[in-house]
Length: 85
Ligand code: HEC
Image (cartoon, rainbow, N blue to C red):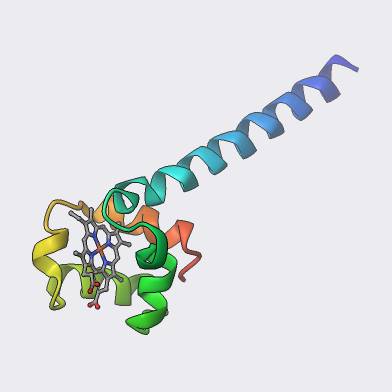
């Protein structure tokens, strides 16, 4: 019985962490991207379909100067939160 409880608690903990890290993924973007400029809409407009596209657009694209403070981790986190592959 205790074992099952431990497993359930562990599972909830892991899921909780995953959702926190997803929220984190877009937090860096949300500062500038709000409302009709939300990241999900921006990637749609820029036709970004993969994590690699996002990395390239933010690092080398026309708006790269707006994104130079983002780390690779920030961008990968955002890609995960946006469910890009
Ligand atoms: C310092 C402010 C700032 C931050 C932080 C920021 N952006 Fe941007 N981003 C901009 C601005 C400004 C534009 C240009 C907006 C426009 O074209 O209307 C832009 C454009 C974009 C575009 C379109 C790129 C293109 O080539 O057309 C995408 C996609 C994007 N941002 C995604 C993100 C994601 C994902 C994050 C978080 C990891 C992020 N941005 C963080 C300011 C920011």
